[in-house]
Length: 287
Ligand SMILES: C[S@@+](CC[C@H](N)C(=O)[O-])C[C@H]1O[C@@H](n2cnc3c(N)ncnc32)[C@H](O)[C@@H]1O
View 1: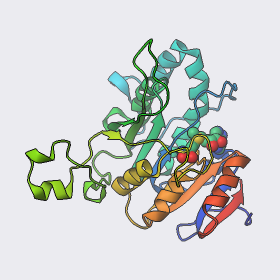
View 2: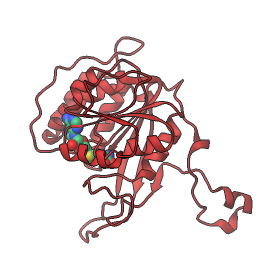
View 3: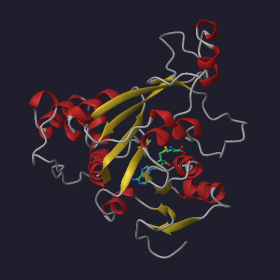
């Protein structure tokens, strides 16, 4: 471990071992262009209630969905589903910090599964402001058993929110392109260039025996993170992932010339990142 973590714009790429909330509270406002989050779902652990403070906005008070205040919306949504209430009590103060830490042109990507995403959408509309919702990305994959009693679930959802809908950075020219499904119907030039991805991304999971595999159970594919980072940040920008896991966000950021801060409280995640970044210039800290 290096000494105590203290972020600076000209500091090194950093991995911090510890609970993310105190780490987030130590970071200065508007320091990150991009925040990608892939939180665990409902660990079953009752999380301690955090004091809720209102999120700042230019107008002072944040009015969300259908003109309701965030507090009202949260009251309705969380009283509807107890399991989600616990989860949101854990996530909410961290998402408030994410909002504070985003640059004015910055973007949040929140990666969830089909069980929690709909509640989170309503609450994020209220927390960020409905006008700040940019996209719902569907990551579709094809792996594992197929249920015969319902449609097999083979996708995750990534909710995308911007800090300011008038100023956010998004560069589709930087995004990797996809092959046309019917190449015979378009010009050879178009076939050679490929087409821009839509909000539905077909991408394999990390292959259990592929070169990308780190052994960390919830590892996400580099291809997904590279696309996110290429579109919503510029070379040299700072990227934050405070549910860092195996460090996929850092690996993708580094390969695209971005800088990063990753946080994780699990020693296994830190060990995985130490192996993954063994040859890279990355500082490790205790939170
Ligand atoms: C779904 S995994 C992230 C996987 C990651 N996207 C990847 O590609 O490897 C969620 C991570 O959040 C971490 N985590 C959960 N609660 C945390 C907390 N309060 N502070 C820091 N890390 C936390 C877990 O240890 C886990 O590694």
